[in-house]
Image (cartoon, rainbow, N blue to C red; front, side, top):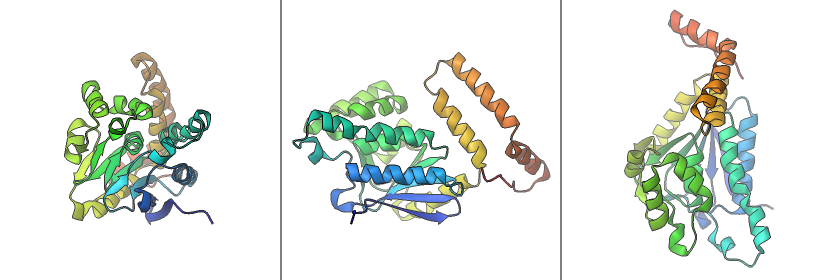
Length: 261
Protein backbone atom coordinates (compact mmCIF):
# COMPACT_ATOMS: atom_id res chain seq x y z
CA UNK A 1 0.00 0.00 0.00
CA UNK A 2 1.36 3.43 -0.94
CA UNK A 3 1.88 5.85 1.94
CA UNK A 4 -0.06 9.07 1.73
CA UNK A 5 2.07 12.20 1.70
CA UNK A 6 -0.63 14.64 0.56
CA UNK A 7 -4.33 14.90 1.38
CA UNK A 8 -7.07 16.91 -0.33
CA UNK A 9 -10.42 18.10 0.96
CA UNK A 10 -13.07 20.68 0.12
CA UNK A 11 -13.31 23.12 3.05
CA UNK A 12 -15.91 25.50 1.62
CA UNK A 13 -17.74 25.91 -1.69
CA UNK A 14 -15.10 26.16 -4.39
CA UNK A 15 -12.19 26.02 -1.93
CA UNK A 16 -9.91 22.99 -2.23
CA UNK A 17 -7.26 22.45 0.43
CA UNK A 18 -4.20 20.40 -0.49
CA UNK A 19 -2.29 19.49 2.67
CA UNK A 20 1.32 18.34 2.84
CA UNK A 21 0.83 15.48 5.26
CA UNK A 22 4.06 13.64 6.04
CA UNK A 23 5.02 15.24 9.37
CA UNK A 24 7.56 12.55 10.26
CA UNK A 25 9.84 13.94 7.51
CA UNK A 26 8.78 17.55 8.13
CA UNK A 27 7.08 17.34 4.75
CA UNK A 28 10.39 16.98 2.93
CA UNK A 29 9.79 17.30 -0.81
CA UNK A 30 10.55 13.70 -1.66
CA UNK A 31 9.74 12.17 -5.03
CA UNK A 32 6.68 10.54 -3.48
CA UNK A 33 5.35 13.73 -1.92
CA UNK A 34 5.97 15.73 -5.09
CA UNK A 35 4.22 13.12 -7.24
CA UNK A 36 1.16 13.21 -4.98
CA UNK A 37 1.20 17.02 -4.85
CA UNK A 38 1.38 17.22 -8.65
CA UNK A 39 -1.50 14.73 -8.95
CA UNK A 40 -3.63 16.67 -6.44
CA UNK A 41 -3.03 19.96 -8.25
CA UNK A 42 -3.83 18.41 -11.64
CA UNK A 43 -7.08 16.99 -10.22
CA UNK A 44 -8.02 20.38 -8.76
CA UNK A 45 -7.26 22.07 -12.06
CA UNK A 46 -9.54 19.67 -13.94
CA UNK A 47 -12.47 20.05 -11.52
CA UNK A 48 -14.76 22.92 -12.58
CA UNK A 49 -16.32 23.12 -9.11
CA UNK A 50 -12.99 24.17 -7.58
CA UNK A 51 -12.25 27.89 -7.84
CA UNK A 52 -9.24 28.33 -5.57
CA UNK A 53 -6.58 25.98 -4.20
CA UNK A 54 -4.94 26.38 -0.79
CA UNK A 55 -1.68 24.54 -0.11
CA UNK A 56 -0.91 24.06 3.58
CA UNK A 57 0.68 21.60 6.01
CA UNK A 58 -0.42 19.23 8.76
CA UNK A 59 2.81 19.80 10.72
CA UNK A 60 2.44 22.10 13.72
CA UNK A 61 5.60 24.13 13.06
CA UNK A 62 6.87 23.26 9.56
CA UNK A 63 5.16 23.90 6.26
CA UNK A 64 7.95 21.98 4.53
CA UNK A 65 11.66 21.53 5.15
CA UNK A 66 12.30 21.56 1.40
CA UNK A 67 14.15 19.06 -0.74
CA UNK A 68 14.96 15.64 0.67
CA UNK A 69 18.59 15.96 1.81
CA UNK A 70 18.96 12.20 2.18
CA UNK A 71 18.24 11.86 -1.51
CA UNK A 72 20.83 14.55 -2.31
CA UNK A 73 23.54 12.46 -0.66
CA UNK A 74 22.56 8.96 -1.76
CA UNK A 75 24.40 6.74 -4.26
CA UNK A 76 22.16 7.25 -7.29
CA UNK A 77 23.85 8.39 -10.48
CA UNK A 78 23.84 12.05 -11.50
CA UNK A 79 21.56 11.09 -14.40
CA UNK A 80 19.00 9.56 -12.03
CA UNK A 81 19.09 12.60 -9.77
CA UNK A 82 18.71 14.92 -12.77
CA UNK A 83 15.58 13.05 -13.84
CA UNK A 84 14.11 13.26 -10.35
CA UNK A 85 14.74 17.00 -10.15
CA UNK A 86 12.37 17.50 -13.07
CA UNK A 87 9.50 17.36 -10.60
CA UNK A 88 10.36 20.82 -9.25
CA UNK A 89 10.02 22.78 -12.51
CA UNK A 90 6.91 20.73 -13.31
CA UNK A 91 5.39 21.78 -9.99
CA UNK A 92 6.26 25.46 -10.28
CA UNK A 93 5.07 25.57 -13.90
CA UNK A 94 1.84 23.72 -13.11
CA UNK A 95 0.90 26.27 -10.45
CA UNK A 96 1.36 29.07 -12.97
CA UNK A 97 -0.68 27.27 -15.62
CA UNK A 98 -3.41 25.89 -13.35
CA UNK A 99 -5.96 28.53 -14.34
CA UNK A 100 -7.05 28.96 -10.72
CA UNK A 101 -5.57 31.04 -7.90
CA UNK A 102 -3.24 29.04 -5.67
CA UNK A 103 -2.70 30.27 -2.11
CA UNK A 104 0.23 29.19 0.04
CA UNK A 105 -1.05 29.01 3.62
CA UNK A 106 2.25 29.04 5.49
CA UNK A 107 1.29 27.72 8.90
CA UNK A 108 4.94 26.92 9.67
CA UNK A 109 8.48 27.36 8.40
CA UNK A 110 8.84 27.40 4.60
CA UNK A 111 12.34 26.26 3.73
CA UNK A 112 14.53 25.59 0.70
CA UNK A 113 12.56 24.08 -2.20
CA UNK A 114 9.33 24.81 -0.34
CA UNK A 115 10.28 28.49 -0.40
CA UNK A 116 10.21 28.11 -4.17
CA UNK A 117 6.78 26.48 -3.88
CA UNK A 118 5.49 29.47 -1.88
CA UNK A 119 6.92 31.95 -4.38
CA UNK A 120 5.33 30.02 -7.26
CA UNK A 121 1.89 30.51 -5.67
CA UNK A 122 -0.28 33.49 -6.49
CA UNK A 123 -0.75 34.62 -2.90
CA UNK A 124 0.96 33.87 0.43
CA UNK A 125 -0.76 34.12 3.79
CA UNK A 126 1.52 33.39 6.74
CA UNK A 127 1.15 32.57 10.41
CA UNK A 128 3.09 35.17 12.37
CA UNK A 129 5.43 32.51 13.75
CA UNK A 130 6.38 31.18 10.29
CA UNK A 131 9.82 31.77 8.82
CA UNK A 132 11.01 31.66 5.22
CA UNK A 133 14.34 31.08 3.58
CA UNK A 134 16.81 28.98 1.68
CA UNK A 135 19.35 27.59 4.18
CA UNK A 136 20.81 25.13 1.65
CA UNK A 137 24.18 26.90 1.52
CA UNK A 138 24.70 25.96 5.18
CA UNK A 139 24.88 22.27 4.23
CA UNK A 140 26.92 22.67 1.07
CA UNK A 141 24.06 23.08 -1.40
CA UNK A 142 23.01 26.16 -3.37
CA UNK A 143 19.34 26.97 -4.08
CA UNK A 144 19.88 26.65 -7.81
CA UNK A 145 16.36 25.98 -9.06
CA UNK A 146 14.45 28.28 -6.74
CA UNK A 147 16.82 31.16 -7.45
CA UNK A 148 14.73 31.83 -10.59
CA UNK A 149 11.65 32.30 -8.39
CA UNK A 150 13.51 34.28 -5.74
CA UNK A 151 14.79 36.75 -8.34
CA UNK A 152 11.28 37.20 -9.72
CA UNK A 153 9.85 38.06 -6.31
CA UNK A 154 12.58 39.74 -4.24
CA UNK A 155 14.98 42.63 -4.84
CA UNK A 156 18.32 41.41 -6.23
CA UNK A 157 20.55 42.39 -3.31
CA UNK A 158 18.23 40.96 -0.68
CA UNK A 159 17.80 37.83 -2.80
CA UNK A 160 21.58 37.41 -2.87
CA UNK A 161 21.72 37.87 0.90
CA UNK A 162 19.09 35.18 1.47
CA UNK A 163 20.83 32.70 -0.83
CA UNK A 164 24.44 33.40 0.22
CA UNK A 165 23.98 33.63 3.99
CA UNK A 166 21.21 31.07 4.33
CA UNK A 167 19.48 33.05 7.07
CA UNK A 168 15.73 32.86 7.58
CA UNK A 169 13.33 35.79 7.62
CA UNK A 170 10.18 36.16 9.70
CA UNK A 171 6.70 36.40 8.24
CA UNK A 172 6.68 40.13 8.99
CA UNK A 173 10.01 40.54 7.18
CA UNK A 174 8.57 38.56 4.26
CA UNK A 175 5.66 41.01 4.11
CA UNK A 176 8.10 43.94 4.13
CA UNK A 177 10.05 42.30 1.29
CA UNK A 178 6.81 41.91 -0.65
CA UNK A 179 6.45 38.14 -0.99
CA UNK A 180 3.98 37.65 1.89
CA UNK A 181 0.55 39.19 1.37
CA UNK A 182 -0.80 38.89 4.90
CA UNK A 183 0.55 37.93 8.32
CA UNK A 184 -1.98 36.49 10.76
CA UNK A 185 -1.86 35.70 14.47
CA UNK A 186 -1.65 31.95 15.18
CA UNK A 187 -5.08 31.73 16.84
CA UNK A 188 -6.74 33.39 13.85
CA UNK A 189 -4.77 31.73 11.07
CA UNK A 190 -7.07 28.88 10.08
CA UNK A 191 -10.24 30.98 10.06
CA UNK A 192 -8.57 33.88 8.27
CA UNK A 193 -7.10 31.60 5.60
CA UNK A 194 -10.46 30.00 4.88
CA UNK A 195 -12.19 33.40 4.81
CA UNK A 196 -9.55 34.73 2.42
CA UNK A 197 -9.85 31.74 0.08
CA UNK A 198 -13.65 31.83 0.23
CA UNK A 199 -13.61 35.46 -0.83
CA UNK A 200 -11.50 34.58 -3.89
CA UNK A 201 -13.90 31.74 -4.69
CA UNK A 202 -16.73 34.26 -5.17
CA UNK A 203 -15.03 35.78 -8.21
CA UNK A 204 -15.69 34.76 -11.82
CA UNK A 205 -13.81 31.49 -12.46
CA UNK A 206 -13.71 32.28 -16.16
CA UNK A 207 -12.18 35.75 -15.80
CA UNK A 208 -9.84 34.49 -13.08
CA UNK A 209 -8.61 31.76 -15.41
CA UNK A 210 -8.18 34.21 -18.28
CA UNK A 211 -6.40 36.68 -16.03
CA UNK A 212 -4.03 34.13 -14.59
CA UNK A 213 -3.26 32.85 -18.07
CA UNK A 214 -2.47 36.39 -19.20
CA UNK A 215 -0.20 37.03 -16.22
CA UNK A 216 1.63 33.77 -16.77
CA UNK A 217 2.12 34.47 -20.46
CA UNK A 218 3.40 38.04 -20.12
CA UNK A 219 5.35 38.33 -16.87
CA UNK A 220 8.73 37.84 -18.58
CA UNK A 221 7.99 39.59 -21.87
CA UNK A 222 9.14 43.03 -22.96
CA UNK A 223 6.55 45.71 -22.26
CA UNK A 224 5.46 46.18 -25.85
CA UNK A 225 5.01 42.47 -26.46
CA UNK A 226 3.19 42.05 -23.15
CA UNK A 227 0.76 44.86 -23.90
CA UNK A 228 -0.08 43.37 -27.30
CA UNK A 229 -0.89 39.99 -25.72
CA UNK A 230 -2.92 41.66 -22.97
CA UNK A 231 -4.91 43.67 -25.51
CA UNK A 232 -5.97 40.40 -27.13
CA UNK A 233 -6.90 38.90 -23.77
CA UNK A 234 -9.00 41.92 -22.86
CA UNK A 235 -10.77 41.80 -26.21
CA UNK A 236 -11.56 38.13 -25.60
CA UNK A 237 -12.89 38.99 -22.13
CA UNK A 238 -15.33 41.49 -23.66
CA UNK A 239 -16.99 38.55 -25.44
CA UNK A 240 -17.63 36.57 -22.25
CA UNK A 241 -20.98 36.28 -20.55
CA UNK A 242 -19.30 36.82 -17.17
CA UNK A 243 -18.05 40.31 -18.04
CA UNK A 244 -21.55 41.29 -19.14
CA UNK A 245 -23.02 39.71 -16.01
CA UNK A 246 -20.53 41.45 -13.74
CA UNK A 247 -21.35 44.86 -15.15
CA UNK A 248 -25.11 44.18 -15.00
CA UNK A 249 -24.91 42.98 -11.40
CA UNK A 250 -22.96 46.08 -10.39
CA UNK A 251 -25.50 48.37 -12.03
CA UNK A 252 -28.44 46.47 -10.53
CA UNK A 253 -26.79 46.33 -7.08
CA UNK A 254 -27.01 42.54 -6.79
CA UNK A 255 -24.63 39.61 -6.53
CA UNK A 256 -23.40 38.32 -9.90
CA UNK A 257 -24.19 34.82 -11.12
CA UNK A 258 -21.06 33.51 -12.76
CA UNK A 259 -20.84 30.81 -15.37
CA UNK A 260 -19.35 27.52 -14.20
CA UNK A 261 -16.31 27.91 -16.48
